[in-house]
Each structure stands twice: as C-alpha cells, then as structure tokens.
Length: 516
Image (cartoon, rainbow, N blue to C red):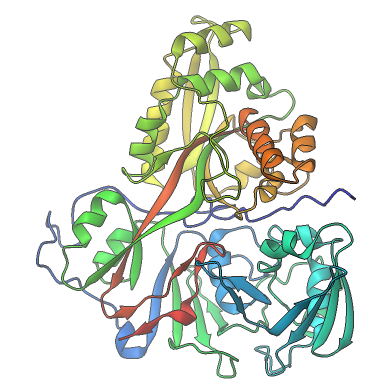
C-alpha cells in the first residue's frame, strides 16, 4: 500500500490569542468577583444583550480572524466563523450518526468506490448552484490544508453530471478517510477562479459558502458579523451572529451582559450557575494542553536527556489544578482519551528531581552551570500564565533557569524563537491526524523534531496495536510534553436554546441555536 500523505489535521486553537491551533481556548480568569463587584451570584439576575429582541447572537473570539478560507486557516477563531459559512458533504453527530448536509445520499460499491448524489437545491451565497465540479475543485485545494490534506492524492473523482459523482480510493479506504471528508468544506469553483489562479492560494477574507450564514464585515477592532443566508437549503433561526474580539475575560464580558454565552473556569462556573437567568453546560473536549520543546538542531532542548529532565521536574497534578482552574485531568499521552484506540501505554514521568539532576549532569549541566530556558505563553490565558509560574519553580529545583515571556500571538511558535512553549491543540479522533505535529513541513510541527522512528511508527499504523505503538513512540519523544486534558464549562443566557457542541467538528453550529 502506498504511504498515505500525513494529515496536517486540525491544529486549532492555541488559546493564545489563539493562535495556531487548538480548539476552544478559554480566555477566563479565575476570580470570584462579579461584574457588579459582588462576591456571590446567589439570586442575582445577569444583565443581558439585546439578542432576544433583535434575534442576534453575540459570542466571543479570543483571536483575530485573518482569513475565511475553509481549507487554509490555522486559528480556532477562524474555524469557529468558517464553520457557520461553509459546509462539508456530511458530518458525524455526537452520537455517531452521520448527518448529510450537501448530499442526498451515497452508496458504497463492492469494489470500494463510492457513488454520491448531491442535493440539487444548494446555493452558494453568490447565488450560484453547487455542482459536482465544486467538490472536485475543493479536493484539488486540499493539498496544503491544515485540516484535510489527508484527502489529497487519496481520492480519484469521476463526475457523471452536476449532481452525481464517484470517488475511488487508490491508497486508503472510504472508511479510513471519513473523518477528514467531514472536515472538507465545499467552495465555489467559479468564485475561486475569479480570485486566485492556483487552488493553493488563499481566499483571504473573500467567501462564497453554502452555509446558513454569510460574511458581512470585519470591523477595525476585529469584530466579525455574519447574517443569515436567505436561500439556505436548511434551517437556521438566528438572523445575525456577532463574533466579539476580546482580549480580556469572557466571564467578565458575560456577567456584564455583553455576550450571550461564555466559556468559564471551574471556580466561577459554580458561581454563575446561581444566577436566575443562566443555563450551564459542561463539555468534555478532545483537547490536550502541553509544553512544546524546541527540537531544532542546536537547541538545548533538542537533547532527549534535557527533555526527559524537564518531564521529571513537573508535578502534573499541581499544573493541571492551576492551568484548568481545577477542571482538567493530568495527561500522560499526547492523544486524548477520545481518540480511537487510546490506551495508557506511555511512560509516566512522575516528579523526581534527583533523576532530573542525573540526566542534566549527563547532558553537561550542573547547579553552578544551569541551563537557561525561555518559556513562552499567551498573555490572554491567565490560568496558563499561572501554570507556567508553577513550572518555572519546579524546573528551577533542578539545573534550570527559566524566563517566562508572555506573548500576544503565536508568531514565535512558528519561528522556533523559544525553548519551551505552552499551547493546546484539538485534532481529530483518529491518531493519524497527530502525525502533522511531528512532520517537518506540515505547517504545524511546532517542535521542529525530525525523528525517523516517529515517522515510521505513524506509517505503520493499521490497527489498535500499531496505533498505540505510534502513540507511545510519539509521546515518549517528549517533543510535546502532555500536561492536561480539558473540560469546558459554558454559561448561556437562559432564554437561549443552545445547540449541542460538535465534538468532531470542535465547534458549535449556530444554525441550531434559537431564542425562546
């Protein structure tokens, strides 16, 4: 079997001003005060937006949107907006049920090919009717996509007519690629060709999706407005969605009545539930937070002994309690428990400063000649900053000196201008998607590691055993040191009918929201 092109998967939400990758960053501060200065929410009524009156929905973004290109974005904030504008052929609901969006049906044939029938009434926002050639063009754009590059070269498409086409799979089966197919959002070929000469070029802020909402404007302060598409082929209730760009706490904005819902930390979540007009939601996320070690040639953390020493210095229980405001679970695997074939097969580096000292001495460092490290973290994540302060104290028990630098964006993560960095990432529930984190040139290999053993382990994945081996090899390289898994806490205006959080798409689909 031909080696499959490694997926650049969904490196979303860094929760840095978000940044690069990682879903659902929580811009929250762990304080026990309310917007009015009180210390308890008991019996209070929260101020609200005008959302119910004007049928709008105001949500928070913790990073700027620089593109609405559904194949070439890198930030969680962008994905949250794009998910309302563009649609895939189908997606998997939280209960495992397939939901057809742009297709009427598909048929799997005995030879492994699949016949698709597109819906005939789907309009793009420009008014053009979606055709099979648009799906073909979208496939051509997937080569450099951070979410569906696995599809490029693994699907051969034959068009019968505007609504009928067949896919053949020369390297991997349809079932193997389903996760990525539902992440491929269909673009309008003619619209794109008027803007770009090469499918791999970015559409930037230009859009022509089939989704329930169309882009209206991005203001000078970063806010983004979408309006309901009148000719949408499905149903949507909310007329206007306002994405408010926040550099501060979502909790504070929600309690001041500026948002219709917000993500909360565990401590304040207990308080906000005491308001009389708030509905709570707890959501387990397919998301892991970790330390990135700069593994590029010449970097001190490219030495495995140094990375192991770092891992032995850390007390993950303490880091988790502070970094998640008491709402997370310590992680010992770069994959989350929601990933297929997950198992606790990786080494646990329990805190042991003596072992760390021995490894550092072997690497050439000592108490009198410690290793100085720069640790970068998002200034927009106060709980992460606090967790980094704890890690600094723990590392400096061994032969390290740590300088914490708070950053406003993720540019330094892409240029390897750091020794350690704290980020969070959400990928698909297939471990093959994690390959991009370890693959030079993928666009999301933030550690700069180049280890043939890891590449071989991912290439050998065919079943549960080989997948767990890849988890073990990749995680124990310590290019990324897992810290904790995340649980999100949301608070909604009680007059809002909120849709379900899509774990596979790592987003809310706002077409499912409505006001009571």
